[in-house]
Image (tube, rainbow over all chains, first blue to last red; front, side, top):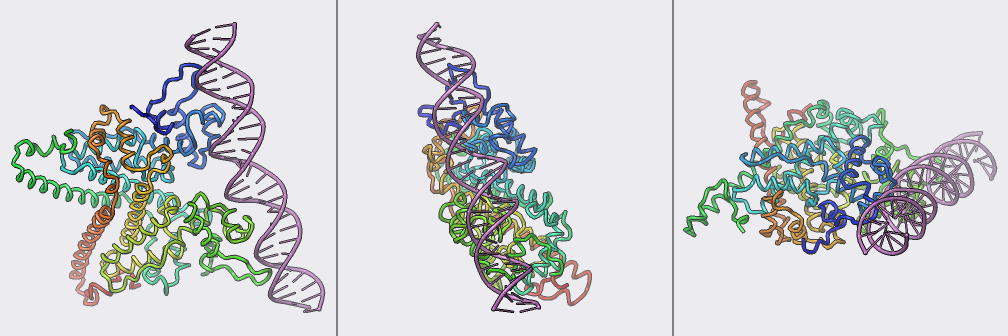
Length: 275
Length: 275
DNA sequence: TAAAACTATGAACGTCATACACAGTACGCC
DNA sequence: GGCGTACTGTGTATGACGTTCATAGTTTTA
């Protein structure tokens, strides 16, 4: 609020840009530009998104976009942020249920817009929409006894899992498009190819498995059970961590015999949030 | 061996290309091209890798490379495969120890060559070196009672974890380079930025945490304990799965009272590998 | 009404991946 | 030993792309 020396795009994105008082009204804004880019990416893939295509779609020349964004990379960041819908409301739900939902929805977003995969860089979010998701994860973990750093780790781990699972589902489902022109478009073809190529001498275990037909049942290669399996794995770990923190907390409370600190485990939480 | 209608690059990569009997000797081969590209990427990042830069480094014109590879994307695939060193030998080691090492080394590879992050697409590997790694994971899981599909899932999950953890470490460590020019190059700066920008009304939990100083201790944001934590989580899950399969197997053995099937749990394994 | 502030445009530049025709080179056969 | 053939590397060209910059046009303030 005081300094406000953000990157220009972010300043625009957060509405910290002073309203222009003179000159012609801007014909565009970040939202319409980003929306246009997303529509193109959804329809033609990321390769179809060029400054030119986006600009002509919103009805201006390509160079006009540089009044709003600094570079194409800026635009990609905006796109990756803008695809996120509103997160569900965590209030009243057990943290585990909520985070499971939270993760699944994020994965589904990526699967619906697979062009975010090349964009996603696992960097801490700076856009308003992804930060909204992060906020909800924090809220869901309120009162669990985790400290704020741990909450961040949990959230980023789950978000990362959503991303990688989406990536696996995507490449397994859409096929290995890079080699699609060579007749490899299913796991079975992949298996045949490996069978041709693997020397049992240097790849003993793998070539045995391939020849036994691992890749015949292509559809079961990746399915929803795999997603739930990994997710439950991670959530089990979080639960374990929470249990440990809870007992730590109890011990500390006993040491400092202070009634206030022994408040309800569920709602108040806040050994950090309180000031 | 019979058909051999692979993509041309793969054919070259696997040595299935007929040796040219006439004309001048090829001045290059895939290995030197790939090595040159990797050196450039290590030194200048992926942006420095162009057909021109690679070609001049190996001493030819840019277009000469197309005698060996079909496109730049081919080259990127080759690079991603070639960075993998020889995997350690799993023989004699417990599967869990080995897979932990297997995963950690893969993460370290990516951290040493972070340009693979934009390349890595989680697709099933086709290069000889990554397949070698997959083979070793298979070997390590031999005798655990997992079926081949499960082994693949385990390996790809762990490989994915190595990748995402490397991504997180990289973006957290090297800083948010995209915004580095705006003075954001540490987690603390990131926290200050969020504090400026977040409205406590719409981001209640997160802004409270930020104002409490979550991002002050930048160095502890991501450390090795985080890696081990997630890894152990996953390996615990695998162990659980193995235990389940082992009991399944035992029940089946009892039903079919066949002495041969009840052989040593550890070494032979192979309800699939044994033809 | 004139100046000021701001917007969109068009031309231009440098880079890049890639296609294609051509020239040079070495082997195999006569 | 010479010729054809198959193959390799080069040069030129092309089209697309991201981005810069000077310019023209437009709206508000003074």
